Image (cartoon, rainbow, N blue to C red; front, side, top):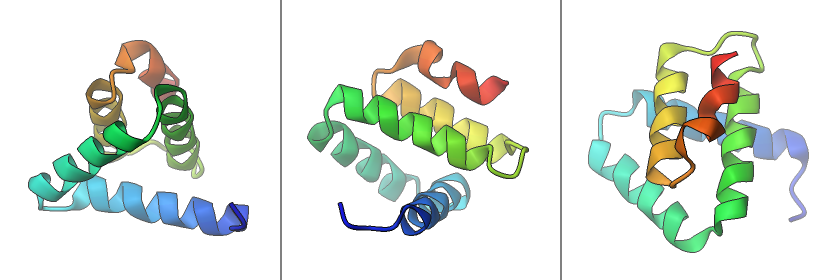
Length: 88
């Protein structure tokens, strides 16, 4: 709660990079499952929106970034409509 927005953005950006490029699908799957288990739906939706915002920070959404955003949306029960912003 007391973290600076720039620190939070960096953590999210680092996490997105690890998820997108990490070789350990099991670790990624466990992390996705843990977030789903402990974070309420409305907060998962906000988290996904934040990830999309971070992915768009350089005005380019990489294929890997889009893939993890779509994977998270599906895993967290947010469906296609939640990841539509990442396609713009």
